[in-house]
Length: 510
Image (cartoon, rainbow, N blue to C red; front, side):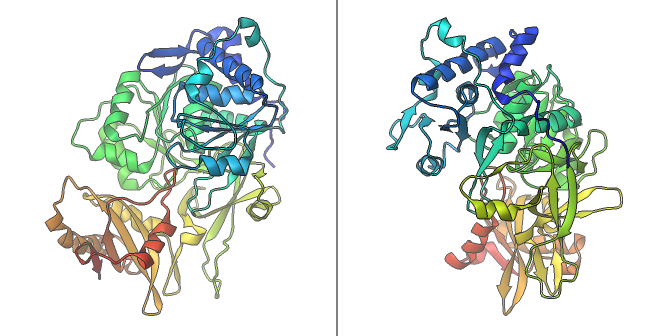
């Protein structure tokens, strides 16, 4: 079993450590109004901790945080941890707070939505950080934290439509920060980070808070839903060196008719969805920077399998992150003949979650001993590289053969007019067929051209895929349904087939 460091520094002192080693004047967060230093951030964190204690919160009480990425969110999150409470960041645009409060039995909601009718105390982020208190109140040390204490919860992204509360302990943080951010990314104090994934998501929490602060680096945030223009502007304005983003946004940036000059960038990371080789190659060609594609999950806190700088194999998920073990096991699919069944990835490592809150059945089914069953299908090649095939429930069985939707989507991603796509299995005339939902670049095609595009998409797939991988049906849609973490919600696409009539001008049966 990969070791967990029971003596690792707790999350509650993540900012203190930077200040104590004499780096309090270094920037921690870059904003439009200038940098917030580590000393300034520590004061905000202490103010929040004092305010929560004054409200009567105790160790292990839950605090739901419903804020957009900001200094206030960072202070609220770390302030709660400092006084021993358990922060639960959630999507501020999902109308999920009432459900989260009821499920977590939270004692406090931190939200900018003052109109909420909720069964607990509520404050805004500004009210927390702007509180006036005497310096003597800020001298209290962090609440002692054991490695087995709860540090924070994250709600899973809900790619299946049923988010669960994932409980992470203090011991989990050092594994991700040291093994991935430290050893794989080589993160250092001079780095400036930006994550387009939000802090309420595990991928965003790592890249946008845990990693930079753990290593004494700095971070900046994009408010609202990040787009390609805002992303490029922020990289230039703040001199971002390490970027955490998702395939759809990398693709959107390179599809723009603009020259890309990002001299500050030294590391680009992609996760949440597979990165198509065509997108990787386009980005590398336009920027000169390779993207490190990796695989992670809320349960494992961050990326546990990744490509390495200077050794990227486009389309692969790379190799295990140091400290993590991976193995492939027979999947959990309903396969009568059992032949050529895709293999499910199991992982164990130092950042494995403790449990799903109040969901023993899901927790039991997620583990086999110390191994976490990811629900993802992979293959392992002779070079030791892992290749993503799809979710266990999303593998396509056509004419007795298992087919990876990822292969189909990677081919479509190479089409010059396609932004992204998702392939699913549909039943037609008593047998399974493949249907591809496709999002095209609306700036490059008119509505009148869409019917002819459907035929060309089939030809494009036929030229680059085995015959049994070519979709039988294509449909153009405006956007793919996605979870808060950027994962395609294929169950919504399946529901769409039975709940809404299809437009003849935008669908092709071939």
